[in-house]
Length: 156
Image (cartoon, rainbow, N blue to C red):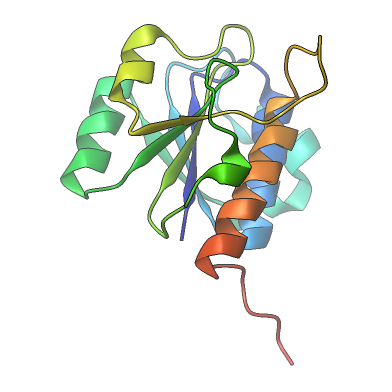
């Protein structure tokens, strides 16, 4: 099942929303530090509500540590960025992809771009700069789960 990774997130409400999304869909979130806020239940609780205890989150102390971890498990890194020509809807996702979201304030630095196995964008109307990181994560994760048949099974 695809995972989500957050590169040095700035906004606790977005991180909480993504953790709630991940809990509901059975996805792991990798939080790559340092974050722009204290990583605590109180910082995340407003957006994550009571879903936080059900969310699977792995913390990585740096991008280098995260990158070493994912390479050791042969996980493909898929960076969402406005700086790509490839639309996420034109991409073939794998079950063990990790969807990397850049920092809200500045995206991902060049070394992160270079480490990514693929870079994807969300097509937008002309003149628009970017979509909220939590909304973007939901859009692309939904497509990745659809393509890989990884949505949680609904109890009958």
